[in-house]
Length: 360
Image (tube, rainbow, N blue to C red; front, side, top):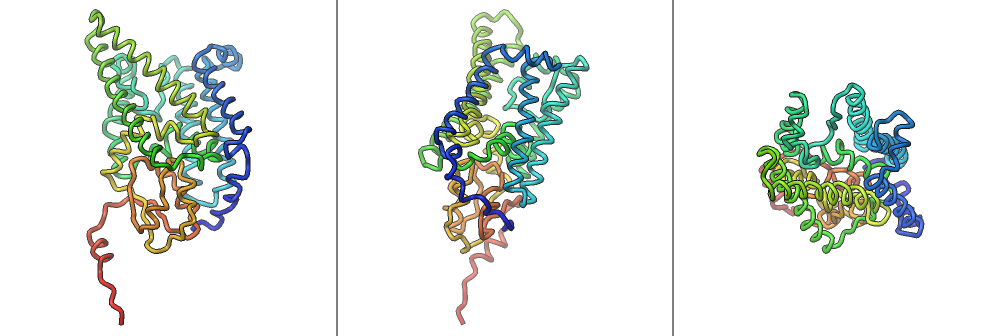
């Protein structure tokens, strides 16, 4: 157990801005307004140009990075006593600042197409579009294809989806830093679990089908009438609904109301795909038997809405497709019952656990 893991936990529901009070609603409305302005207007282009940034997207990336740094500082004040949380947060910030802002900005200054090295298909479905691949140098084509289709699944089998969702992905990094004060608001109800099983895999299916249709149309070239129009409309509405509304307006704007992983839990196609692979891999949350005191901290602070306590109470180590391996359940446990592990189940351990107890 971390020495000070329990500090300030009792204030979770005491502050109105952290418990869906009026301040939380005002903050949420403000964030939603920012994302609506970003995605559906050009208001931010002049301020971006005024400070030497080419477009509103570089301004957004700059503000995003600054917000993450501020959130990381606040997060580490609360949870920096955990080595896992410290290292994870440093990596989050480093990846965002370097790969999410500096590298794309430098590429644009050099007259090249900006490319975000921290994103892969299907989170960035256009990375496998023929037109995108034709516009990139060979090394980036190899990076996009081998990264998305080979490296990502292999790393997930070995480390679980946490290597990406909690260490690399910018969406998850924002949730883990600036969104941390609202992580406890994620619903743990059965209805929410059923909803996420429908929505997240529906978006994954939509991402796969959109990639196939648009790539097929671009490969065939123009002149296919109704099919070309359908592909164009499908691509347009995918980016409008999924990339803009669900990922930005809803996924980030509703942090103070629905918790920090709304996008990751209910809509992210990358999270859905990695979750399926994770079920086949080595990652699990191990439970020390007969030590849980049912305090509920683990379930309260699970940003993915998993009822971790139920597994701990039943002495059951587990792997859930939705788990992003943030490690907060283990961090806030007062008895050190939980541990994040990467190892295949060992048959010998199972036999050892089933040995009869002899009472002399």
